[in-house]
Image (cartoon, rainbow, N blue to C red; front, side):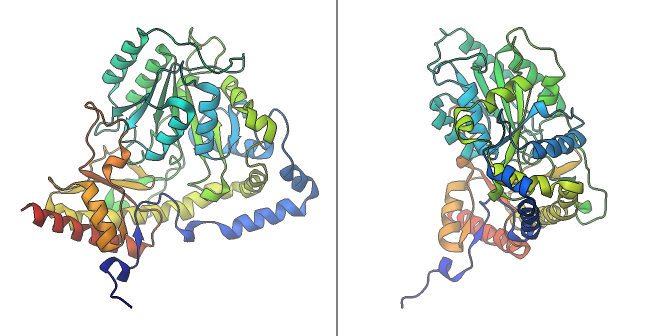
Length: 446
């Protein structure tokens, strides 16, 4: 046998995966919920069928979810605002099928840096070449002046007729705006209230739909570092209104007589239960919800995730989800984030790198921290050498770019680290390996 390389001798550590650690997945609870579903013939048959029309999803789950969201966001408890999806990614796919058009939709605007996997979903919907990055600022707001200026320029172009058939239950938006407004992926920043309100008003003026991935909202805790291991109460309500709630509080805009609205909330059980349940929801105005429920694939194939939805409905009985988030997920992620941030400061702080400042709203959360590398160190080099020499997987900053044009920030000086998946012991060791790679690259520069 030949000698092993350095990376082959080390255990792999993955800071790419934005998924929960195996120890945080409620397998026993899901098994018990499945047993309750199948022990009741009525519930079992309902879960094994296509689902009732209109296909907005398994009704008992919608009822429990509506009550849960109403309590967390102080929003209306109204089933007409909710449809069940096959998770946030499948939900985004249906949104684009029913509310965008490859010719009539003029542009897609994504926060830069952005959730990289979302780009392909927009491209698969025929919107290739229409994606633009809108820079995110230190406080979590975005460059609204640039966005308004560029949208106004496009308003002067000749309108193209839609290539899709149009019906009364569908709408084609001129612009799409995709954001992760709370504990953003990858930066971890939260968009302030003033920016949320201004963005909604801008969308209303330009026939735009703001698609909010609100998938990290419930994973929140006090942001002060010294409080990471304390017994301070964990917030049980959202610190800021969602953009859908801001839009819903406003009267219908003249350019939207049917009342589809200009924002929606795309949610998921992936981060608060498990990714494999492939179940999520869209919270929006009733007209928009009916449009999504009228998707051809849903009409033909039935309600998304019908069987798993029946299990999740059982799981949500008696406040289980709130307790799971509050007592298991949040304490674990809170501790993991603090450990990783301390390790980053220890390993990179003296080198001129470290955690990118996040405007302190009093809360931290989500799955990721955004790292600034020392000057002259390129993220693509870090990712390659970390993989080859240290068995460490790190996503480089350029992966999170949108269109890579002159206006957009260059992300070669950044990497994203996930603290959600690896064991706690691996978090510190992985950052130590990262520091080793960065020091080696700095030595080459010198």
